[in-house]
Every structure is written in structure tokens, then in C-alpha cells.
Image (cartoon, rainbow, N blue to C red; front, side):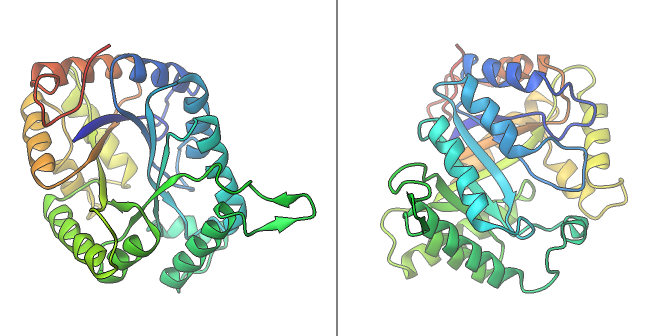
Length: 301
């Protein structure tokens, strides 16, 4: 299991200009990937712009989205070209984790339809594939050029149709940032769908968890999860908070559990935007032995 770190784009009050430094530090300190999450109606930097910045200032580190919400973006040709652009800038380092989207406000304020999300997701993925295959053309030729700017795609979803969608359109499956049970069931579901679709090999599995390091880790994580999910009364607060990593003990326990469950890539998303979190997480991973354990791919630079 390879370990990455999320960009601090969804932490309220983050200094926006530090996204560049965060990306550079993440690569220098040995993280395998940089990740981004996505919402429309929230205090969050645009994930595509942020990953474009990260792509421009790094050379080795992989770039993940987990997930970009397809349901309210509206224009699959534009969306496909945006992803292809990041993939070209990064020289093939982008893996796009895609989901339908679950936040009602995002659909309301984007004017996207509130129903028929599954069909919309299928239609969008089909059209994006056409773009990447060079089948969308103009008088000047394919846009973008075929064989270039084609990111790897992981598809989210927690029901049978979602697993089948991942097997049909994707290179694997992206799991939610909570619940080991959901992850284990999802890995089984998408593996079965993979076999049913006669796909070779096995699906690539990506998931994420929230983290915070330092003396104020518990308080900062409490505040961040409550803010992101609306309040501590949100039905999502307790399960997300329970799986958030705010100590070495929690970090090691979750690394072992996720690796044993079959996760290929884990992105740890920050509950604090302080630049020292990149360094503190690298140090914590070293303390729990991630750099010496052959199960985990993490080396400090």
C-alpha cells in the first residue's frame, strides 16, 4: 500500500498560496501521491486548478482525486479536457477518482438534475472516454489528440451498479473516507464485478482518511470534521471522526487494517492547513515504521 498526502484545499482559512509549497514538500519528503477532494458549495479551492499547480511544481509524485463529483459538472467534454490537461502537464501522473456526488447543495446551486444520477454518470463517462479516444473532432482535428492526455480512472459507488460501473469504465474503485466495513464489502463487490466483466488482473483500490498531527491534533480534527459535515449532529460526523487519525496509535492501526483490506493507495487528507503538518506526518510515519515496513511504500527524502 502506497501512502500519499492530500492538499489542504478544503481546510477553512488555509493560505491559498501555500498549496504550491505543500505540494513541493510532499514530494520532497517521500509521499507517493498528492490528493484532492471536491465540493462546490463549501470553502474549498478548486481541485482541478490546485492539482494543475501541484503538477507544475513536482516531477515524481502521483496525483489523485478522491473524488471529483461528476453529477453536477454538466459538460463532459470540458471536464475530460480539464483532466487531460492535468495529465499532460504532469506527464501521465494523474489518476482521476470520480463519483456521482452526494451533497444536495452542490446539485441545487449548479442547476444539475436531482434525479437520474446513475444514468447521468454512465453517459458522462461514455462521453469522456470518446474525448480521450479522439472521437470528438472539429475542423482542426481530435480534441484532445488521441493517445495523449488520458488519465487513469477510478470509479466510486457503494452498490452493485456502482461496482459494475467501475468494472466497465475504470481502472479500479475509489472507496469513501470512512468505514472499514464499507471498504471490505466494496473491495469484494468490485472484485466480483471485475471477474464478471472479464477484466484482466485486479481493480486498483484507492481510499482516504483524515489526519492531524501535533499537540492540538484531537481538537483540530474535531473542529474540522464538524465544520466539513455541518455539525457534530450530522450523521456523518461520528463515523468519519472515528476513522480520523490523530495519534501514532490510530495511524498504525489504520495503516495495517487498510493494507490488509486490499487498499493499493491511501491518501491522508489534512484537518489542519499548517505547513508543518506535511513534516509532522512524515515523522509520524517514520515513528510507526511505515518507512521500514515492506507493506507500506513510504520513504523520506
